[in-house]
Amino acid sequence: MLELAHALTSLKENTSELLQRKKQLQQLNRWFDIALNNMGRGLSMFDGAQRLIVCNKLYRSIYNLPPRLTRPGTCLASIVRFHVKRDNGQDDPQEIERQCAWIRAHIAKLARGETFTYTQHLKDGKTVQVTNQPLPGGGWVDIQEDITERRKAEEKITWLAHHDPLTSAANRVYFSRELENALGHLRPGAGFAVHWIDLDKFKEINDRLGHPVGDALLKSVVASLRKTVRGDDLVARLGGDEFAVIQAGAKTPREAEKLTKRLLTAIRTPRNVLGHEITIGASIGVVLAPRNGTSADELMKNVDVALYAAKAAGRGTFAHFEHEKAA
Image (cartoon, rainbow, N blue to C red; front, side, top):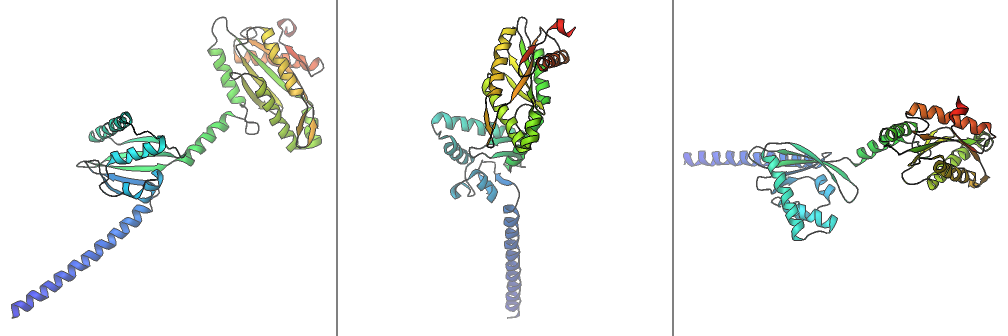
């Protein structure tokens, strides 16, 4: 009887301990779920048979996966197939074979113990950086980071480094780089023109009507210049009311002059700017490369001389650089 009592007591203690451990395990699982689903990145884990072990809410959200494809045991191929079919509408045998080839290459890298990262551009506009890390004994962990806003910020910084924020035209830095590139890639017998544009009496309009009107006028002028040039020409704002155009392929003064006249006409066209009817003119200096210079410094020096000549002629006109007059 005493032995039975001891056995019952021991059973009770063991049962209590098991229940306590179960509660602890349940608590640990709750903490794990909380941690997993509050990560700032998506996470998915696959076993050596390419089947899903676990994933968090952000992973499901990034790829907008249905619940049936986020259950443990789901095959990676099924997830990939669903994603491609939804985004591209492709689900033919050739496409499925391409997906299988991608998975094989993916697994081969992991089998070599490689940790690697690649970027995905999803159809909904998201940019996702995925890092794959192999696990001991097979399988791997994927970490998905939504870098959409970071990439947009990086692209904006890069854009601002090369563009005028007011008019969206190329800025002086980008203009200088493109001028150097044009000279560096100039083939024998080829050429291009540089048109240096200075608006006439812009300061008077800006002072009289205010900076908002002045800014809007500058944007309107750039829009007119862009409509006038060809697709491979470059329009740049160099600061204030100064602009430049690199005219690709212009080899003769006549070819350059045709565009110069169109630019003057486009600028002179009366325009409504924030309720004000404004007509503004411009003076333009023109040089040809390599005829008027074989370096950026030489071209810019000579086009400045040509612009000065246009202004001296009474403004509202243009002038080509002439060696005789510059001497």
